[in-house]
Length: 70
Image (cartoon, rainbow, N blue to C red):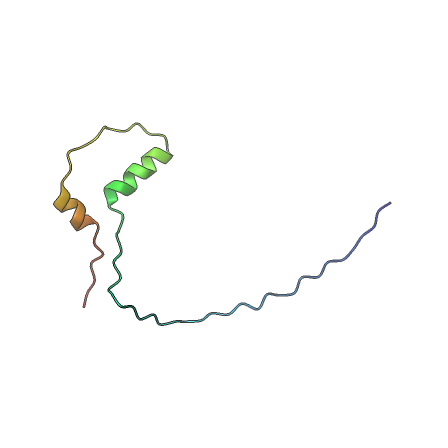
């Protein structure tokens, strides 16, 4: 027995809405540093790690910022 049925999919009604959000505090984002991105990529590619390096808190903080022009 070979029953066939036709399925008709209607085009979805997709829309775009722009919403302005006003908060009570500034939005703080933490950017991934290049070092962190390279470490994640190396791990995904199963490359050998070099061990832990000494931490530089000031450089880590500076690398975490998104710089904006006013």
